[in-house]
Length: 181
Image (tube, rainbow, N blue to C red; front, top):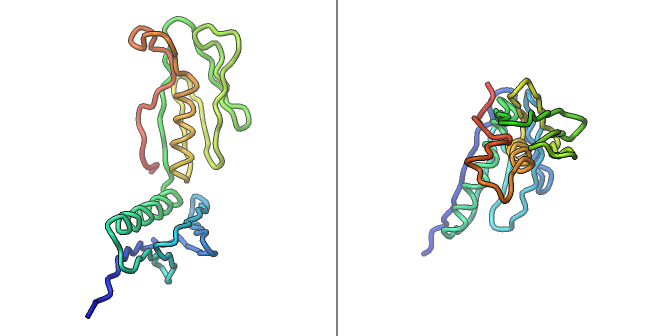
């Protein structure tokens, strides 16, 4: 006799947060906005039952259990994003050539980096807000992946090649990250 094994993770939706499942697309709405994400994998099932999001898998192997935990973690980050939001603080550093950083549309323009003639550009992803105040840059948004990728785009836009980074410390660097309260 074989007993049915089920790996199941339940994620509770806090007050003011709602979830809607349309096929493979999960939409979570909250005070900071809405995030939609597509979960396509045949091994697990995703359901919204009242104020709970449930991820389960029948007869799981080790990788299936890990996948259920990963999907539950993504849903938890979506809930955290629509309730609190995510925030990255970044610092502008330069030693000789003063760098000018400005936001125009969905791009961040970095002018006079290491005295270069042409400006460098960095892409701002959807749903992310970038503010420049003096030597500090603030990157905020509800989607954790978009906020993190926008911050990474800023760091990569000022990456220096073929020079010693200990001597040439110019660039934009992440100083802190986390939930926005």
